[in-house]
Image 1 (tube, one colour):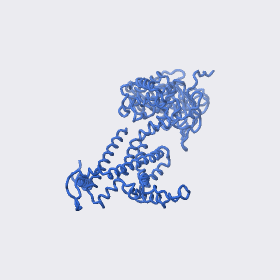
Image 2 (image 1 turned 60 degrees about the vertical axis):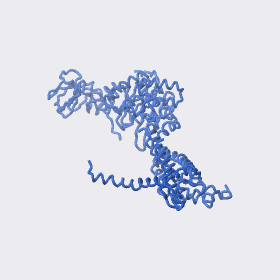
Image 3 (image 1 turned 120 degrees about the vertical axis):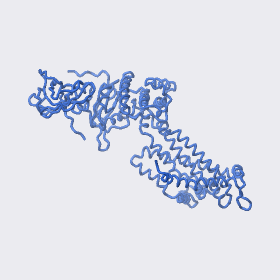
Image 4 (image 1 turned 180 degrees about the vertical axis):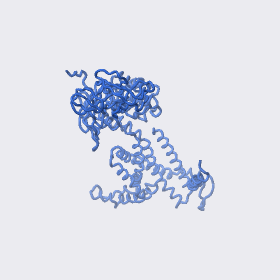
Length: 282
Length: 354
């Protein structure tokens, strides 16, 4: 069908890309995760499971991992709670303003993540917009310090950043629901609330699962928000990985944690894919 | 003459309904009554407003003006989910996440009927449409004809007072379609529920309906039984839309119609008049007699239609007539034709509308 040269031209570059930038690094990480660092700060190719043992036994690692999952879970929940109604409104009630509102959901994605994280810093800080306002209207007479450098700040920022990622798949799945199904439901005597819970919501589950997965996975691996706004109590697992690869110079442990995360995320993606498939019917 | 009193009150009464979308007038002043147990077809071309009328009855659209009554109550002020009206949608609109059984039971479940009753009524409805064997299949796993049956069962299981059907057979192929026409008609007789059936297919309308309401550009042209609408079309549009016809435009002068070289007696007042003459009312003969108009013509074309043929004949003055003859092979080049003057049905002209 196609010439050999054409097939080679099409397949070799992506394969090379994947090999150099994906397979080789993962293979290296995989190897590193079994090695160790000697007292003289050199990597010894010792091949044992000590790094994985550390990960499971040392409280700081698995507790941080659990905290990261808890933060990611909250981000996921709030993104869904914010994103679903918005996507629903966009799809069913926005009418002529649909395109405009859709663009308004997208626009924040054009703004640098860093800028948005810093923006929250100026809002939440002790001299920040929020604290100034609260003191001005005498809700409080001293700056509230749980606002910044806390898991709260991290959850808030990540929710702000990742909600568009949940809105878009939910919106897409709502748009795919044939409107005559909604009419059929009303026709058969279902009230708008019954129609929502028995027809619209079940048919939007693939979008909800995709959106939830985005929010959870992206938050789980986030390191900028906890770095800028998390403080000591808002540290997440990626911050540990970064410090292990950096200042702590423990690449083997960093690699082990990274691979553990990778397995967790791949499992989640696999489950979410299964769930999406189970709930799609077209 | 006394007008016959209506024994059964009308089940549904559409009163002066009009609908505009922006500047686009879709329905204008439509009034129509539907009796209990009646099979009424709303027939019209695409864009005639037939689906909009159906959607107004179902409650998916609100009329711009006019009222819809069911019995003694206003129907058009109720939301669709409170109307004792069910719809079979054009593309069935089966819920893809529910199986056949759950689809059929949907209306009963949202009405919170007892579980036992739901099971029984769903089983009954599935039996009625011969879908019991497919009860646990998802809609995507059954054929179009079967989906059609499920959609019917899903609507009928709620025992509506009125069933609306929006071109339900249009997606089926010709054979299945004819079979479903017969099934649908006998099912309607069996359940005794009034059907309002929307179609653009005049043949389908003729086969199935008790009455046909012919809609054109948002206005009713004629509401009558299939026989009446065929043999006594009210307007030129009706005559042409239903079956084949010859439209003869004539001039009436003191009791005589003059149409080219044809002329016959009439009781119509002076002025122009339009007549519909069905091809089968033209005979290849030269018998003469009272009340018969004769004409001779040259055969232009012969089209085979199975049991009959349609022959186009051109008269010396240029008028082309379509004649239905029994299928008998070739006909002569010149034909003698005649028709009884009473078969030339005077029809109103159908004015152009936007």
